[in-house]
Image (cartoon, rainbow, N blue to C red; front, side, top):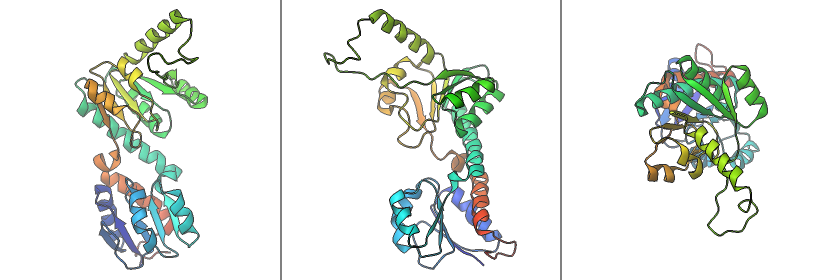
Length: 291
């Protein structure tokens, strides 16, 4: 029979606790370390790094630690002491399933945050990784007019092959203080620059819904100034997100950083996903043994 410690009071962890108990395991569920000696420790997906920093010195050789985005310095040191680390989202099957659940949550946030239907509305999906792919497919299935914004040529080609409108991502133009002397802002071709600005404004002002999955600052002040004021901006990037939220607040834009959507909208399904990863490493049997 296995002994497990589940940390973190999010709903996803609560369901994971119930599922492991139903398999006959001995499970401790709390929000801070309790000594006991465990086969595995399950950290919350959101906040794994912070929890690991708190418990690292308590871990013992042979224990598994499940979570996400572990601090490399800690994992390298503890691996040398015989601790095993499993990042849920680096398991390929789990990552795609989590992306699908995240996409559903993002759509729920858009519906709740907007005043218009998704059907026939122009929308932009920024980034075409796992989450962007799942999201674009579901938005199109709901009748949205989806454009994929992606920098990687291969991913852009895949999006085009899947029938999406596409736009090649570019870094946002750097802004300079008045009077600054730089090559970038000393161009004599002001007419072409003005034309480029008009095209940029036309592009960004098209969309009623904008979904960002890119883990970098991709919507700064310049681009946000072109976004229509009634647009809904759903940011799925890890904190601090991909938008300039100070500017959004200043201008009253409807922007939301949406972390932890699987735990918020589908905690039971999200927990089942985590359990599949755990079982792939620990092979829990029906009678509760850890093989």
